[in-house]
Image (cartoon, rainbow, N blue to C red; front, side, top):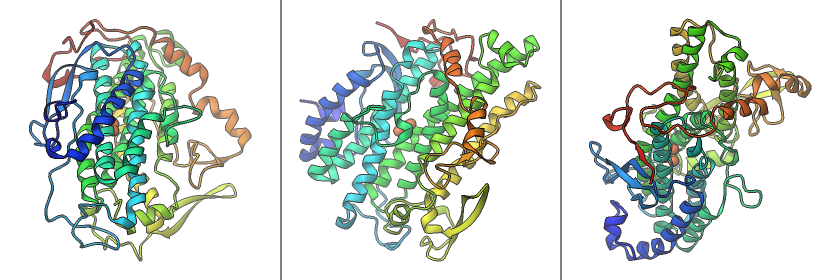
Length: 474
Ligand SMILES: [Fe+2]
Ligand SMILES: [Fe+2]
């Protein structure tokens, strides 16, 4: 029996909610079993310097301290309720926000929550071996932080399923612990969450690109007319920011180290760069191409009647919906999408309602461009004439109007034959993965030490020094 108030930090009055307690009594041990099986490998006895969400107060929502991860206090937090909040878009615009699930949207909302919830444990599974080849104790702590918070995000979605969806909610909550990333018989729901994360470069790219897809999905759900979902997602975003920070700075530090080595040794040929034990910029570009393309698939089809219905029914809004200056109904508006016609990519105006996936993808791409620009400034400062480029939206797509077509990173329609000829330049090859992984055999865990292929960060976690003992092995 768990002492709920103490073990599960929450602001949902869990101590007095018997129904929820009973549901969690079953689910919580199953969750821990999942963590023991699929959480970070060999990590269960480590004391890790982690942040734990303990309240929803903006200044002081989290506390730092050493925790064994299976004892992490996975909590349930919702942004405090605004009694005045309304449904802010779609056919129900102007009604008070819903505090219970509207019967007619029950199965759709459940599906939305399950799909979001499924990504959370999936990424933990994808990353579970990386602790064994970490580039520093600081990075080891960061991946564990991301992992426990993805675990908490699963709790957040499971809370909604248990609290608002009765028996089917409980069944879905269990199924979230049964699926496995990459499993042939029972895979995770979305494609990118079944791809392996085989090395730390892939991890940093994943947290930069794919956790940011998470941010955009959460932002759209934080606008939902179903208030508990909106408030849950709003609070999850506070943690998501750190995940994207880990990704952006992780790649920055790799770029910085590569540039230092290139400058010191006056080299620019990728083979020479590799000979120095760092990752050449061309390989970084190929990883970027891969992670960007599989992540933008996650936004779904360019034209989607589901997306239109989610919006019209008030279930999922646009990015920063309430800051947008229009009728929030989109009955008349249109929006540009792209499609392949012969050997050309042409713009087509379609009803904005059906193009909401594409619009969210475009919002996302704008933010990604900012991060890529910051990576490029590091290269520029080093005086090296190389720049990363985001590939064209149509490059290597499996979902939407570009699926089934072959598009170069520059956005030229090419034949399958041509694509295959260039695949080695455009996508990470088996040889690229083998090289990157050859740098990551064994882990670097002496406090203050960093692997040769990555620069130290600008500062430590929570004002601790870089040589702080972020993880104690027991
Ligand atoms: Fe998450
Ligand atoms: Fe995340």
